[in-house]
Length: 378
Image (cartoon, rainbow, N blue to C red; front, side, top):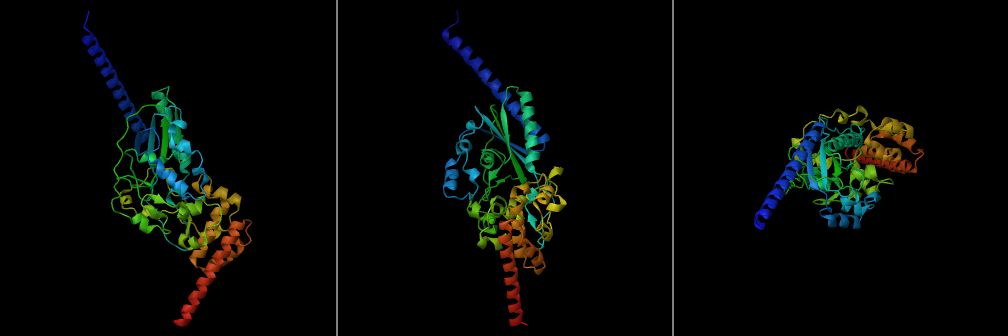
């Protein structure tokens, strides 16, 4: 009969071998997932354990101060936003994946053309990224048939950017967007929540340093402190999420932006490392790259849906989008816009009519001011 110590030693070695084998299996599976994700068009995959949301007190304070504006969905399902285990039972791991949408195109600044945020130049990213995530989840299930998971693309109770900053994918910039050292910030984020154990990353270091270009370049001062965004001032919020009137004092600051704003990202020095996307679906549609403003004033709801089919721009709604267009025309100061704005005074939407009236007043006041200057300085 073997001594007890010998038996215990043998059991320890067996357990150690078993644990090493499990870790090795987890590592191999994690590597295969990363390889498949790259094949599907994700340039980077971060992995972190599914646990209670890090820095949850910051999110609670942000909501408490009302910095989310009228985005009531941010207030819903807060327990699920904080605990992924309430989204997927027995959640163990989270994949955070990045897909590049940068193209070689850059905005121009013609006063009678509208600026649309880069991410909305091409096809709706929700459709593209979600499809690839589902393909990756199918791959994982083929590797581990018992695996369960859920995919999210800017939807559902998942704080994608917070979780991404817990991985090697990138860090949270002072403008509250994720940044990678080799690609900048022009990328979409997708998440797969899994009930599998995977190999965690070490979180990326914050490389913003003392830079504050994004804060200084924001047209409305919406980045009220490093890493703190007041959505109520953000042009992306004002032109996409806000359903009512744009505050009058903010309208002149919107310029010719009719859907979203990229100024904070364009100011970021890390975006000098951005590369062109290989995803053809994100190439700009001709009608989304600096469109002429005047024809957009007359769009009917049916024309709006037809023009922006399978585009993120649909989120703004027809009335909200035309509201943005008439504000941009008012900011143009161009008298050529007056006939279109006069027509907008009879728009079925009171939202459009009210902003058209403001735009006309702005153009006329600008014209009057110019005439006064010309009289004083002939």
